[in-house]
Length: 109
Image 1 (cartoon, rainbow, N blue to C red):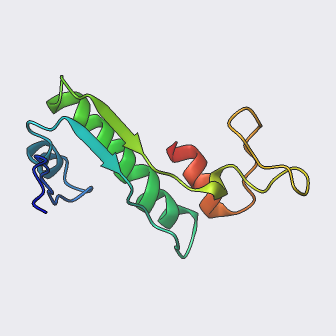
Image 2: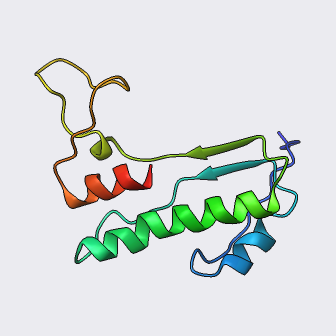
Image 3: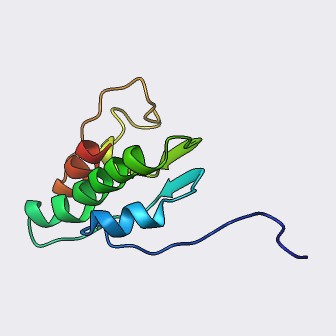
């Protein structure tokens, strides 16, 4: 079955705002699901998670005035573990990440 959706995959460098702005021209939806799951230190997590998200959002604000949706996919580690056994975490609970990766994902959100 042929895909009749108008989907365009683009590549850009999160370290190069100009490449992001070019990639975002005429975009209606952004699905941001990239990030670093491991790093040598906290700064590495910042560079791999917060910097790309910040640069992508800033480029989107500059170049996509009619953006319909920006979907950021994060990680359960940003919320931290459940507060009690058999009690799932939900959006109304305080976020309590316990790892550097989880803390950085929370900041990126």
